Image (cartoon, rainbow, N blue to C red; front, side):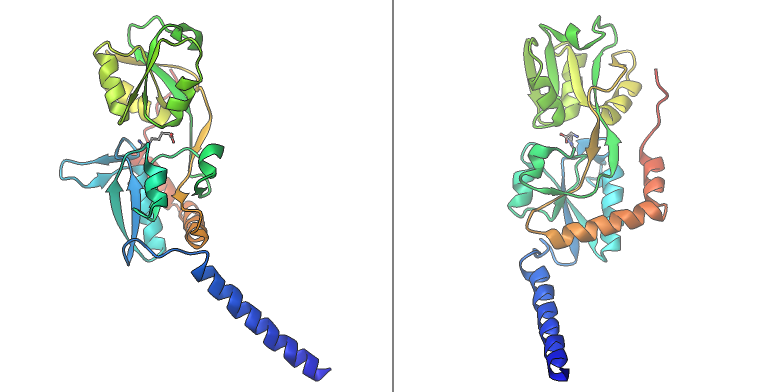
Length: 258
Ligand code: ARG
């Protein structure tokens, strides 16, 4: 009996070692740059990610990414990338994770994993200040501007009677064209459109009421389960210890309902 017990302890130990090594070899991936958490982002999306005059990265996602890297004992490095190709670039190993105000969708989940949600928002409709548009139906026959490959693009693409959808590489370009009269409405993340409209209320307004409810997540390659777990643990800690709230207060302006 004693023998059997000893043997099973040895077997258990062997199993534990095999399981542990399996975690690092088959479920992990090497960091793109040792000592760094390399993060891909499309940095023309204030207040989440923008480039300052000196080229440095700034915004909610940037600060959150730094806080996460710190929890992981890593420095942080940002790579500015196309939003439409961000999942492909992530999966091809250009960066370790993507943080780009990315909405968690079932479709995207087929090719990447998402962290736990870290931000709630949704799409809204922005129109010129003097526009007669009041609701979705009023978009019939109109030209809609969106950022290419975004949930705004998907939403606009599902509308039946619009005249044309203009897809821009960067969201602010859609607003610029709306200001120049080339676009009748922009469908974009509300938390991003609000500050653009607030800065230029003579040109734009937002139709109140969200078109969708969305949550942002951090994208991690499917073969890096180990990193996904570390990121979720870091996010949890950051939410609990007040770091998340500080970042929120620093970057997100609360606009009272119109
Ligand atoms: N939340 C939207 C989406 O996931 C838009 C994100 C665009 N992000 C950016 N950094 N440009 O499709």
